Amino acid sequence: LAKTTQPISMDSYEGQEVNITCSHNNIATNDYITWYQQFPSQGPRFIIQGYKTKVTNEVASLFIPADRKSSTLSLPRVSLSDTAVYYCLVGEGGANNLFFGTGTRLTVIP
Amino acid sequence: GAVVSQHPSWVICKSGTSVKIECRSLDFQATTMFWYRQFPKQSLMLMATSNEGSKATYEQGVEKDKFLINHASLTLSTLTVTSAHPEDSSFYICSARDWRGVFDEQFFGPGTRLTVL
Image (cartoon, rainbow over all chains, first blue to last red; front, top):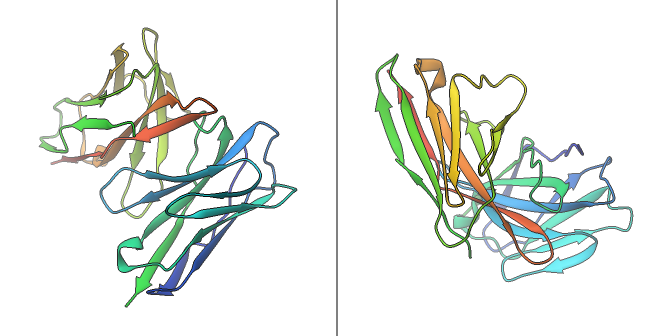
């Protein structure tokens, strides 16, 4: 299983763009990259998923370089409500054997 | 999107009693459900994978006789913590797998806070 490495914590001011990078050097050919958001005492919430290049949805963008050994979650213009823990996961098909790493605790400052 | 519910959302019990937690997929059928445990300030730890109609697959270090999992239907999986002790106090989260056309996705429940006195 591909192991992921993320920064433990990040701080950002409101309105700024936040980029969280995840390393997954052992990613396999069939693996997808998925990011989840978790608020205290709640279950994780799906943010975005991708396989290669760039994926964008209404809440975030995901940048994946050609070698797929890392990925960057980009949150545009964060607000206080984006304070949460963000997990990067790598797994086949996006649902098999999802192992959560340490995650990145993002704190948005007014 | 797909919705997964858990019941109860929190439970307090005495040491030695058993507690059952239900996980339901509300608008889709889930052949596979997963159970996680999360201690304060820590990440989620996968406990077991539950497949409808068959025995659950437990991760290394998880006692199958203590954490009984039953996946009796395509929309319901239950986790029973038997003879609970204070060290079992944790946040238990389930998820259900749904095919999204191109890839599978896990949808997570809101979690159940278990406190064992």
